[in-house]
Image (cartoon, rainbow, N blue to C red; front, top):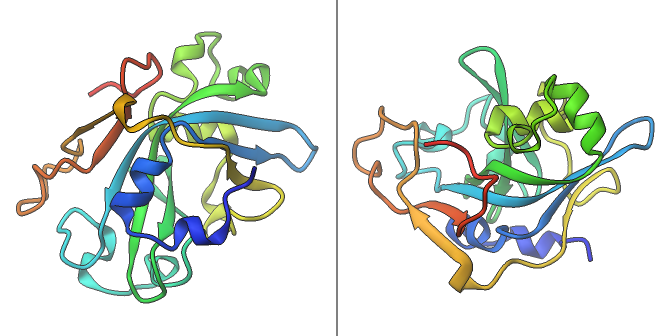
Length: 194
């Protein structure tokens, strides 16, 4: 069953944990279903989280984070790779969840073509990789993730199967750098490399 808008109207920490095991689905314009189970997320709490893009307030880049939860926040890192985040919480509370890795489920042949590799473990084991595999681009910024073409469905894994660690690649953060706001599906071979 597709996740409702209410699912995303919660704190980033709550949603990041509850997304582990849920299937992210992208229907391409030609009708191909590309999907994967979410195996790794990171929570960004917005104001007061010095690793969050929204920490310094609302800008044209972060505007979607200040709106209704359940919309895509897509941006470039290193000027090359797209990263997919889901805006969460209530309007005015700019939390988001970075989708760091997926276990591929549907459309694997198309993902292999998109990623130029046959190695299934390399298709979605990082935020840039999964965007390339699922054909997520900057044009997806603001997309409603409760739509019929881009959504999440299913249920999370039991809490006993979820590990928490500090987020990675946020050396610029100081106050929140060590917070255990990264969530992983325990022993899943598709998580990203530290």
